[in-house]
Length: 267
Length: 267
DNA sequence: TACATGTGTCTTTTGTAAGAGACAATCCAG
DNA sequence: CTGGATTGTCTCTTACAAAAGACACATGTA
Image (cartoon, rainbow over all chains, first blue to last red; front, side):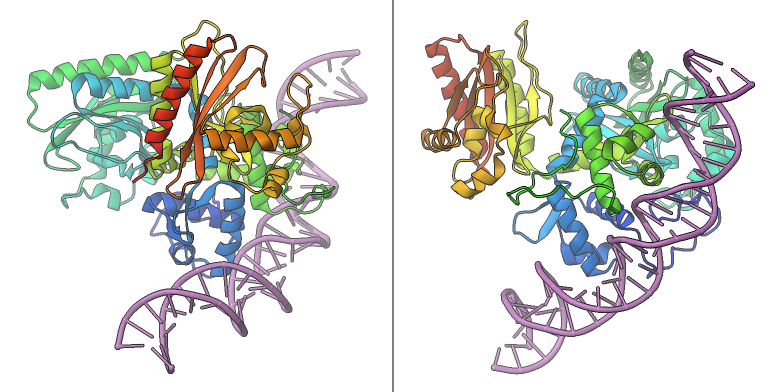
């Protein structure tokens, strides 16, 4: 599965040679980079900066951006020389939601959960071997833990990550998880073996709780949503204060598992 | 539905030969066609059919689809040899919503309206010179009028279309509206001059009502949402039974105009 | 059995799109 | 004002991606 572009995770082990620059790139790949770059920056970008950002010749980016704007995938932003995502992408995204029962119902369920419990709730999936928050609904706490939709976080940092990897071969997991991913935000370092053991435990238990991994103040409760084929297709999770009582945590986990199970019953 | 080719309206009037087939197409254009085709069909498509659908060589589509699937813009659907929109497009779409105040608030307002009135309500915008239903919220009537989000309808068929074109030059309007667009679903034919007059009237009145245009049973009430620059940026509309009383229609229009005005107050 | 139809992966060929660079027009700081 | 940085549009060349087409392998069906 060598694909030659820089976007996806490179499976070839070792410190990947960083696609020596310069070489002539396919237009499509440039476009994919542009979209990723805009997604990463979450705001309109000037065309010049865009060219710098994706490390491509200016002339190329001008041509591509014009095509994309004409097609409606991008739009010129307010002042006139910046671009950001366009309506077309929104429409396509809605098509995706409509065609995807799990996502549609999952979003609903997550909204319900955060309303009922007052805690931040999220729907998570694997995306290109990365953990992705597909939908999140903020809780009602004064200090809410906010995480942007579409944010990608290293798998080992999360409870959901442990569930999402349940059932994968060890080799596959090793490919998905880079060395950097094992280093937590506070600098602590996980052992790959421990992580893989966590995955097995979580898979067997049917839920997962992590405390103080991404930050010191929260714990994360997650439950798996299964596809018809029995694979973990998504997780729903709750982010709660780390000092939440054992009892309440237990209740929330039960609730979470019930809802996740309901989502799993796919037609 | 089977409009077959060109994804954008060709602005160059006259019998422009539509970029005759065969010739070697830019990869990016192929991709844009693929996305448009999937959007038009609203379901997963086999790669072979996709190649036929966009009138491109099979081998090319295989390569492009692989890139797109790797990038997450497309996903392989259930049985394994069909593709449809992918999570990435959903995420980009959400980015668009987040970066677009009007859309975010407009969706909300439309949801409120349909809940309060029980009628189908829609948020509409111009998209590449086409009228587009950007968000729609079904009413509670037994026979609800449903129209898919992202559906594109000829401008002259709708009340919103008349408002959206307010302020455009006559020549621009002529370019946007094809001969076919002037033929209503029931075969009646509008005169371009009448349509242009309608536009002026609607623009001056600040709302628009059309009766029995797209079908014989409904009328469409619409009000304009203005950008800071004073241009009509979107409309919100209600689709109600054609026999709705004068009085109730008036009330609904007043409501609609109030909500549209509120949306117009952009920060 | 033969025959058609669809799928997925190769290779080879060649038309063209990506890239380099030059240009004028702005903009801003000193 | 001047000099440097940025923007948008152009032209020309050649490296390379799109296309053609052959292949192997499934299907179904007469």
